[in-house]
Length: 364
Image (tube, rainbow, N blue to C red; front, side, top):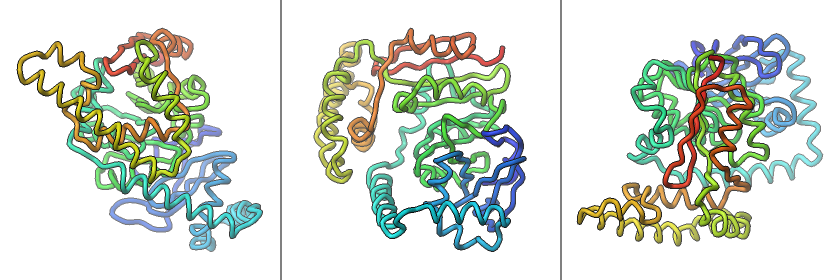
C-alpha cells in the first residue's frame, strides 16, 4: 500500500487511526509491514493491508506463517508472542500445510485459467452503476469497491478520474486485484471483511456489485456499509432480481446445487456447454439487429451478452455454478434495506438481465 493513503483506513474494532511500520518497500508501496492502532495491529503482506479480526485474523496469521518466520525479529515482542501462539494452536501442522498447498493450487487455477480481463469491463462496470451513476459522476470522487474480486471495477473507477479508489475483499482474490492495480497511483487494495470494514465516513460513493446476494447474512452485511460514507455520500448495490427470473430460480439454482462441489477444473470444462449455448443465442441477437429488428433482438434471452467476448460468458457461467450460495430479491425488499439503514433519496432500477441496481444517500 502507499503510505499517503493511510489516513483513509481506521481500525474496525475501535475506529482509531493507524500508524505504519515498513519492513520492505518497492515502487512507492509498502510491501511488508505493520499497521498499529490504539489497541490493535494488522500485517501488510504482499503490498496489501490485511485488516481482519477475530477468527479471520487467526486464520490469516496461521496461513501466513512464512511472513512471520521472515520478519519475526522485527516484530514487537507482544506481536511475536501472539502470532507464535496462533501458529502453535494448529493441531497438525503437516496436514495444515498440505491443505494450504491444495487450496493455493485451486485458487491459482481459478484466477490464472478462468478470469481474463477484456475490453468490455468498463462498459460492464458502468452498466451495473446505471442509470444512477455515470462515468462523469466518478470524476474527483473517493470510491470504495466492496467485494472487488479481481479488482476490475476498482480499476475502472480509478481510470474514470476518481480522487482515490479503494477495493476490498475477504478472499485471496485481493492478490489478483493488487497485481492488476498496483501501478495505478490512486488505488489501494485491502483484505477486509464486509461485516467489519476498516473505514469510517470517508467515501463519496461506496458500491457493491454482485456480492451481497452471496453472503450468508446479506442484509446484515449491507447494514454495515453506509458508515463508510461521508454525509451526503451515496451507497449503491447490484443484486440478483427474483421478479421474472424463473430461469435462475428453477434451473440455475438446482443445477448449481448439484455441480458446485465438483473439482474446479472439471466444473470449468462443463461451463463450456452453457457458454457456447449463450454465444450461439447471441448470434441470433446480432443477426436481428443487423437486419433492423432491434426491438425483437432485445427480447431474445441473454441479449445483454451479445457484444461481450466468449470468455466473459464462460466466466459468468462458472460464477453461477461454482458459488456456494445465492439469494434473489424483489426490488421492494432492497428498497426496504436502504430505508432500514436510514438512507434517503432511495431509487431502484430493474435491469433486463434480471438484476437490481439500488442507490441511496447517507446522512443527508
